[in-house]
Image (tube, rainbow, N blue to C red):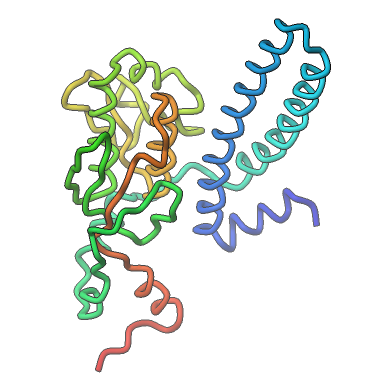
Length: 245
């Protein structure tokens, strides 16, 4: 079975998993792209020092990594259509469902989590960045508040996101001064720029990670704290629904 056939079946039969795979590949592609830039910088440094052996080995490495990046990008383009479901409404509906089991989904909001984790069916309580903690209710608030903080640190850098292909979706702008280019735009309080908010938790995770890297912050320095984790309830639904009493 050819790769395009495999991806077509995954897209049709397992759309949620297709989105998960696409989001994971997206973040990996961004990291690989940054790696290639670092390799090329070292190639330039080696050339300046007339170290031709190192230049050759680094060039071969850059080419090999680029080839793998090309294959991954093809998979990414084929497996994940842009997320067209209403993620904001989904989050509201899930958090307001009336079931006694939902009390069991509360988690310890003092335990820190990182951007390397899966946020599916998880709801945020707060996040910590640069030594300060910010309470939030939704993943959209996490994205908007983080964006506002970064904008105040470097306005010019942030405004360049709207022109950066890797900082936006395949079909939808995540950053723009034109509302019509977006599905659920929200204007930043401190800037004349709109942020797309119709994104899954993992898509928001990826975008925040990219923004932090653009600002030369370590992804591990950004901590999140969860309020609820509905994963067990979704597993119950898949296995036959809730069983009360």
